[in-house]
Length: 154
Image (cartoon, rainbow, N blue to C red; front, side, top):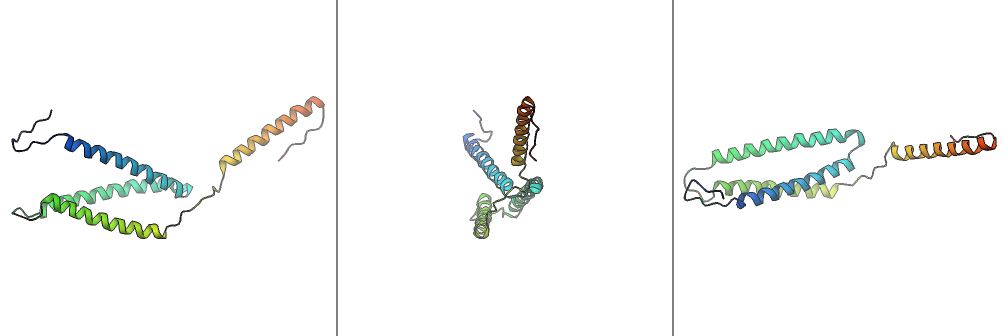
C-alpha cells in the first residue's frame, strides 16, 4: 500500500485510480462516437483531413486548458479566500461546460444529417463486373461444348 510522507495527508490510491479509469473509458467512448460521426458524414476525400483537424484541435484545446490551469494557479490569492483553487477551477470548467452545451444545442437544432449515396459505388460495381464475368465464362464453356457462337454481355 502507498503511504504518505506527510502525516497529515492520508490518501488512498483508489481516490486517484477510479476517476482516472472512468475518464479513460469516457474518452474512449467519446472518440468512438466522434470518429463514427466524422466517417459517416464527411465526404470520401476529406475524411483523413477532418480526422487530422480533430487531433490538431484537441491538442490546441489541451494547451488552452493547461494555460487556464496555470493562470488559475498564478492568479489565485494566497491569503484567506472563500473559494479554493480547486473551486475556481471547477467554476471555470462549469462555465465552459454550460456554454459548450448551449452551443451544442443550437448547432444540433440546425443540423441536418446528410445521407450520402456513394458517388463511385465501387463495391456494387465490382460485384456486378465479376458477376458478368462469371456469367460470360459460364456461357463460353456451355457454348464451346455445343459449338455455338458465343455472345458476351457488355
